[in-house]
Length: 389
Image (tube, rainbow, N blue to C red; front, side):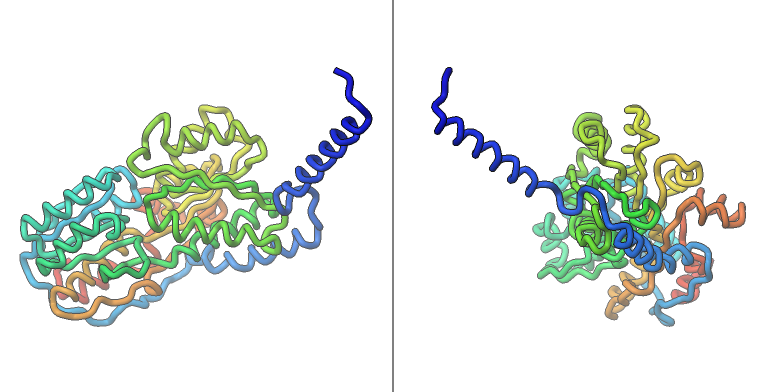
């Protein structure tokens, strides 16, 4: 079909406009970067993470309470957690261990990552007249009707990993999760010379992941002074699909990595990252991807030590957390206010160099039990409670 000159001119003008728009739509920071800016960003990140790398092996002081009431004997307590995720099962089992040591009767309920199961578990605990309820990574706002039933019945609750204000007024034992996200981002900047094109696999219904760790990473990497040229995209899934072979994070990450060859890093919590790395292996992408995680589960520490995809993990001392939760329920059931453990529970970064520099017996211990700092927290809590070890 013939076009008049005016039509051809208009078409050329439109094509030029689209080209300019495409250039403007290029992600911020893409393309060649100023070497001096990159060097500053790498040095800044390296300096920020050093205290957390050192914490993996250096002595840790006790920053918790020096007194606690003697536990009331015979309490029946219910622990609600997703037991197929190590980051939840470890503190859940620690709660059961600590509770048993002081003469309580713990029951662990696997919530399977499903909202209806979580709610049913809380209602069942109320119906059975439990003396306390522990919620691990269970957002009270999502099960508010059951929480209010428990509160109306005078049953104290405590959460882990749900560090946000709420009219439900439930005490929480948590670390600084925004700091954790920022620190993992800083490690990736340092270790990869600010060449970070990151995929975050994010559980949309796990509060600490979606509202604290994820924003901590995105905010840091989104500032071009912190990481010139860094790119970040986030894919979300729900916990009930955690192990689903078609819609879970492993399948999702594999598809995303294959469709976007520029991605060179993946982050999610360790139990998730372990699944993702298995998918990366099957897809033949092992040599292209660097992984970073949260929790430092034993199986992830093994991957780091082998130099297999995962570069680093942020270590939460989950057993320490479990004992701290028991301590606060002990305080509450004795009519005292809970202790604020946020700055008292330590954290650390583990990478291959850190593990290689530890004594073999320490690596073996961490690889079996996970990291719990360098302080004997169990002996300390036992002393506080006057319990027999």
